Image (cartoon, rainbow, N blue to C red; front, top):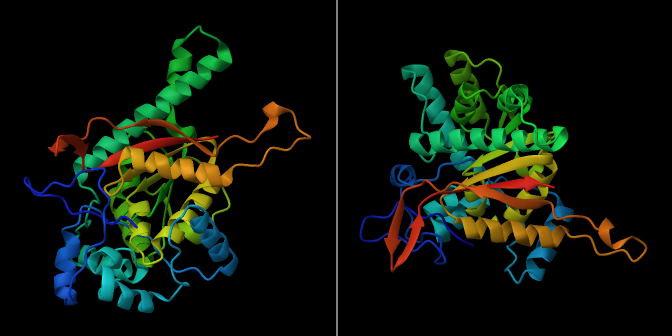
Length: 343
């Protein structure tokens, strides 16, 4: 299981394609853990425990087929906390719901007392880049679809329609304090939903949205790995959630479940935008390709050859403007954002 990497110092930057392992070390105090966790560039919200034995069995079978080591049976967060402290330390703590419940409880109290919004995961510059890039991507996709419908004669009306983002239903997975959705609203998106499995996060997101005048944003407590959402969205945003899922002691299984669930949340023709500080663009594409292979339908000899089911996701584009660094003659960046089309 790949582990999240700390922002590297100038002379210790990690090679982007190198295998990453969780942080190990002795047990540390809660205060030390809090300080160390704040230094991670990834801050997100998933990794809850599921009790669905069938999904567990299916995921374990898929892991075996992929030659990955299946994790132990699901345990409670209390058991996982002990495992995290004994082995993976801070890295796995960031994959536990109990960690994020405590974090957002503090941030909500801090907001009530001082009006502070809390952390912007990956920082404001990355958030601004993701939002503006995603907006342009959606406009470009809308424009191409309009041209396909009306032919090659581009009109001013068509261009205006392409820039109308109100038709894009948006879901933010692991929304945290909801500031990503606020930025999307400022850029013209209006059908906005944020979910998080931490009640404290949703309480903070609602309070901030009310204070800042974004009463049109809907927030609800929901776990992407066991979602109760019954609708699909044209645009699904993930800024660090998949990273945090991978830090849970059952991370490999939970990442498989993530793709199963997200594939049902993205509407056909919709877009999934994943931002990660743990996986490179190529690694995310490889993970999607493995999911596509797992989801492939076996050819039915009774069907025409062209009637086979297409892969769930296909690569669309990625952000190329993030700052890069060199290590060992290889260029890489600390953050990757990749968009996938839902077929």
